[in-house]
Image 1 (tube, rainbow, N blue to C red):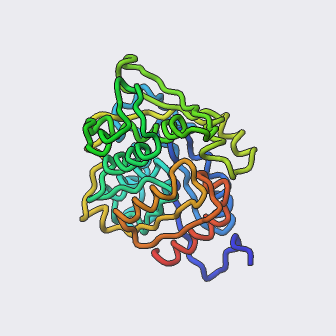
Image 2: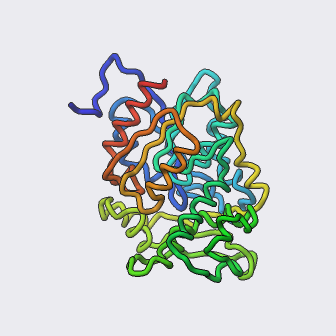
Image 3: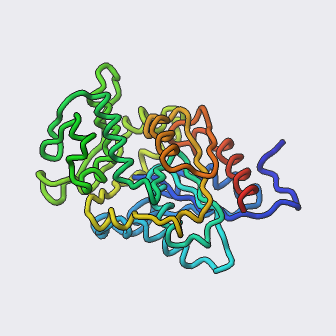
Length: 315
């Protein structure tokens, strides 16, 4: 059966696709083609200073500035239109924010190996779990952002909330660094625009890192494309950004959620995905066993099939 063929009895859905850190709307190109060939609408947005978006990273002050293109898009939708909102990786944070602000415009939110916080599970909680996993692997101390101890201090939450929200972007680099014999490169570049003694203001994935942690099951041409198109991603450790990610049961909680696990994800591990699901249960969980972190590139047809199934069920 050709899943891309649309029959006359099928409904048309509008899928809004939100990319993860350092990427842009371009990373959804395979899924866009599949959805459009099946007669559906697909909008792949560039968040601010990402992809082809004209803003520069230096123009962004808070995480809401970064998410603004999605918020403007949702605001412009007609009152009667509802979309299937799909977030990947860090794009899940923007999806959650849109659910909070525009719950009546979203039929269902889909988290594809994405961050999925909630009213009772903050991003700080997720960061803490990332660091707890790191502590169990590392059993070591490091000097990073001043002096950061990868031990029980993470479990005890002795770090400021701003620092914890920042550190989630570097968890995998630290895991590589402290996992003897892993052989995995730790190639994430940081910028310290506020000074070398301050937290980094942005990060950027290098090709070796993407190959080892994100694209290891994706076609090599997709990694080559990514190496040309990824842009630095801002880091937002400030209290204002943390407050802007808070969610409520009344708004966020009123939107149906589906989580799609990538079974071979080395960027956001399956254990962490399942922990997050347990702490903030969605309405449904699906899994693509042989997908890497870039599920839309390594297993586009499987993701396409799941998205149609989800849309038909919840829209």
